[in-house]
Amino acid sequence: MLITSGDKTPPGSAGLRAVHVYAIAAVCLLCGLGLGYFGLGRHLAPRVAQQTVAPVAATSLNTLPGGHPKLTLNQMKQMADLQASSLLEKSKADPQNASLLIQIASIYQAAHQFRDASGYFEKALTIEPNNTSARTEMASCLYYSGDVDGALAQLTEALRYNPKNVNALFNLGMIRYRGKHDSQGAISAWQQLLSSNPNLDRRPIVEQLIAEAKASLRTKN
Image (cartoon, rainbow, N blue to C red; front, top):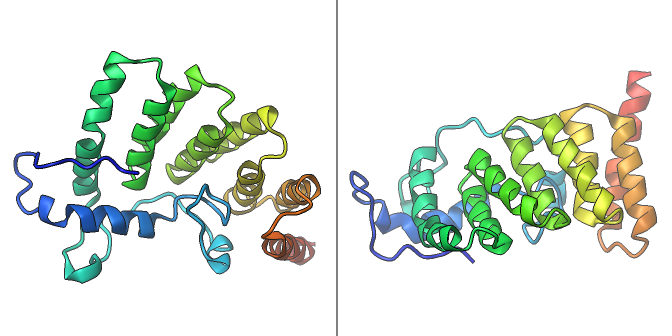
């Protein structure tokens, strides 16, 4: 859950607090964030899972629900700073608390501040290197920031700690497929996902992606 900011509004941001609740809700809906259908509770529709995921370069979002004006990424960062402020203070007093750092990272991630988010995930992982969920989230942030190789490295490391992790295996396949155009590598990751999780409830989606990747290989050949 995101931390509410109370009545503290930064100078020069008149009107920002009025759309605060709507904005944060819209951010969560619009981000998608998890690269694929298994992203830690932020599931995308199956067709979205098959679309190319590119690093975020847009300067603004569409109009928010209820007709509120669209927000720039700078405004979203202001809101993230407000949301994270109390947690940042707690973290200063308790710097070895990985949970606080992950909460801070998640706030920045939800606001499309992916570089900030990955930095806080990285700090948390120096404390809890075997936290596979946090490492997988960091990989998503790196990917959206344009660091495809860094994202793949983090997923590989996550799987070293937990070789059967559903999110890590799925996203490994997605990034290989969409970020590296490595169809064979994606197929390998997704097949490993299916073999290590035989009761996977979204198995048809993974099988569909494998079929798509195999078709792309035939096209190349």
